[in-house]
Image 1 (spheres, one colour):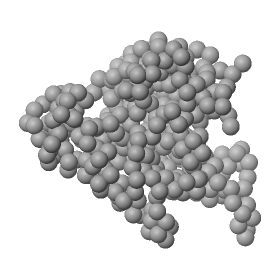
Image 2: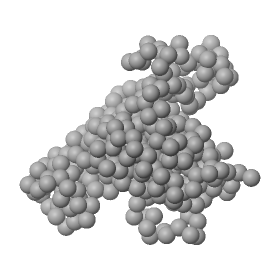
Image 3: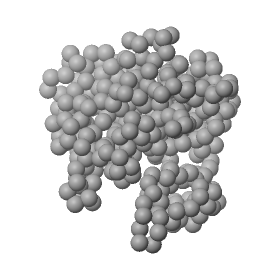
Length: 342
């Protein structure tokens, strides 16, 4: 009997988990859980207060009941090295053995301290023979262990640790869109992960140090209030407040400008080929006025990614409640989908 799959996303301000049954044509969402983290628990993707993270994970475990489940967790793009490399066609075992020699020169830490993984993005025929396009990732072992320790202490036993970037890739792949020219941005609290896809390859991956916290600080400056009060207004009242908020518009513009630069670089690299659409996910993507601001500053269609394009909900799920928070769960979803058999 197939085991349910849990995707667990430990973000800088919250932990999100999704539990899927993958025995159908379209995966079934069995359950979901989200708990807020204290602001001092994680900084720049690094766990600072392990006990706070462990306690929050215990709350998630109590809701998702992880025993007898497959489980995939993630490390952030801030903690990892990602490279596109080409290799002659070989088995996965041979790739794993050859990978250290391919990425050693790119590492900012000793090779013996690295944990590595890869995704085969495409196989092609060249004059020299069959060739593989591979996205390789490496992270410092101690950073991976810093994620695993509180998870184990909270009752989770992850089968794999993946990269947030790969989670976004698997969402597009599962939707059948991985061979389109698309961009996907997951806008979180402290950072934004951006990927640009071309014919099955992740051509660009960037982790931008811009997210919901920047919007909160801009709002606090504009209204001359505390960041705590600005965060409350951003969530509850911003649609009514926002008219001409210069600081907030500048903050939105900073992120949109980074998107524009990446889109332009893609076009230059591919001799005028354009990204067809930019999808937005992540909790901060729902900030009032952000979608319109990005649409006005980039030259491609922009829209939110929709969960219903990827999965169905179990009857026990409160559809209205999930609809309100679904944008926060796409990394969790992508992690779970990475274990769904095609």
